[in-house]
Image (tube, rainbow, N blue to C red; front, side):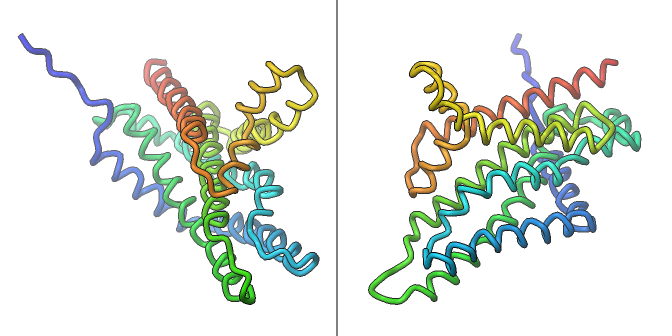
Length: 250
């Protein structure tokens, strides 16, 4: 007798939850406060090298933007599950015919859609540079797109961590701080690799975001970098699914 395997997730449920999450985020005033601060700081980091040293590139964002994202992304994710737990709506979700992965992927993809819009708007800076650069000089579009991809992947990784931290606390501030600490650790850990022996420094360099983002910022797509981001995103999403499973049982 052939046993019918249950799917890991239901596509229609994931899509519905993602749409709902994106809509709620776009209707929340706190989202626009976070966006205002983010674009204000990012705009300054973009304009400073342009006018102070005449450097027509957005690659300099990689030097400072990771720290900003370690604050900004947790601000977007801190309520993804915490608000559900605090208001008691998670119990309602748990009574629906939803798998744990339906909730996890739905919440995460809703955040990912919002974050993709945030990063897409940064193309405005690259387009401005393309018009400002005087021939025969030209904007390196490979470097610009690579920089935006680096920021995208960093945000998606920290977002997965933020969803996980949001799943084990009803307090959004606790979720924010924990996600920030995780994201900040990924940002700085690779910078300490130069102080350690070769073998250990290589491990820390790989775990840290810095080396992967620098490679992407050069316009180079390396399968090792893709595997790095995909692996950590999956790990955090898996941990979130396990946490939700334990909550159903308890």
